[in-house]
Length: 174
Image 1: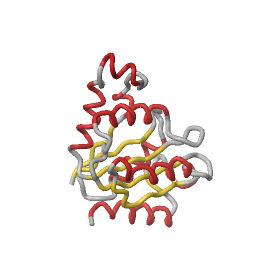
Image 2: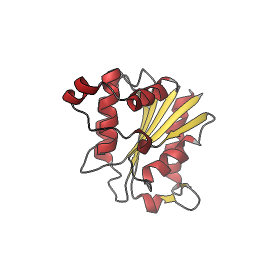
Image 3: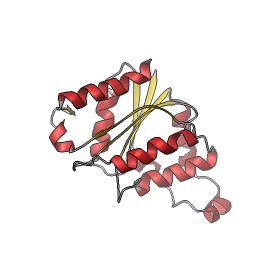
Image 4: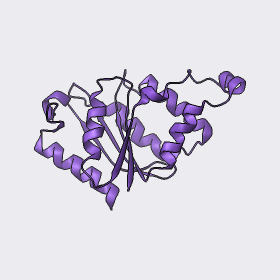
């Protein structure tokens, strides 16, 4: 099994990248973690698409999804929604294929430093993924990241959250 993971953030110190990296280690699989900074493109607009077509980086991102057996995404929340970095990539890739997740099984995660755990963006992602052919098997919000994740050890430190995360990740191997 090949799992594609990424944080829906372009922050170089992303706690969501730490979470998705750790999460993908919980199952037996070949894992590739993407960095959204490697897929930076002009802001999507219909005019830009007509003038220049879809950027090669959008195709490269789509190809990564195509070559994966499962997808794990951890969403950062900016003002209650997706980060602009993720949304722009998503907008461009969806121009290649509206069903961009291609029926792949997915685990959707989110975290934040505060007690909300980026639940708003996670709820939106879970609700919308089926419209883009995402087969969401599980989702989990990790609240208060620095209280529940041991950054030095690189793992969840809260036993109940650890079990919930393991259970979520196990849905990809069923």
